[in-house]
Length: 329
Image 1 (cartoon, one colour):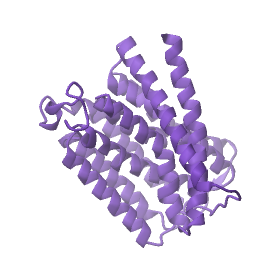
Image 2 (cartoon, rainbow, N blue to C red):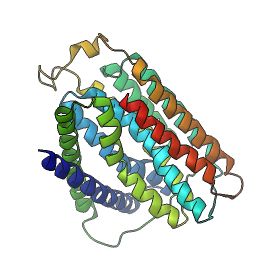
Image 3 (cartoon, rainbow, N blue to C red):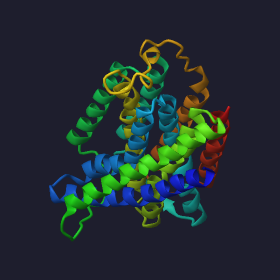
Image 4 (tube, rainbow, N blue to C red):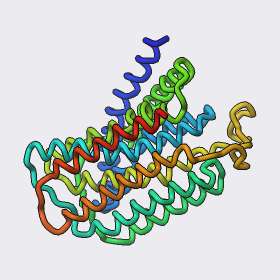
């Protein structure tokens, strides 16, 4: 059983890494083919592509009634994107003594990121399992996308072209593989949960969050080594916003009697019975802290080029280790 669980998770992680890269590649190719602007590609298509694993693993976990695991996945993925993904990327750049700079028009998007993080906290505090909470999140996401579409602010993403045929077909094939990979990771995580007696929050925060953050890690390292620092920042901002406003909407959308079986549907969650989010406050506080740290640092390099900060990188990576301890408790 342990070997089978390991095979599930490792196979899922490998397929998530590969399929998410292909999904991102063909999404950009399709968007370029249909004339979508470079900014819209970077802030929506690429960000959604790297957030798709979180969305799909959360979907399968929610179908199994593991709603706390979904919350752990959202918080864990967002903390991992900033403290682990950006921390490791910044650490690598600092060792290579690279100079970095963010977009001059980055401020509105940093504000949106902070506001979306506050909204995640509010929804989790009120009721993350109701349809109305999900509706608020989805409306907020639609407003953000509408703002991105209407504004010409630029977190730049170089327009990439793909010279080949059947771009749309390859895009759909990548999505199918990604769905299968998400199922494998969820299956393995659930076996760990039932076999070892580990809590849903910790499994979601570690196995699901880290496994589904691999696309961001791979993309960020590849982009950073090419000197495309603005695209790294844009991808992480967009990914965290999609995680908070889209993935967190999954429990409320699925926790109803028409979609779930009677054994899985939890009416008590809808009615706020026995829901106490206080055990999540330390993790939510840490998420807010690393988000603010990230925003302050990115804003500080938007006017002139600066050397990648080793101190900030170590601070961010340290907070992730702290978060693992908090999640386990």
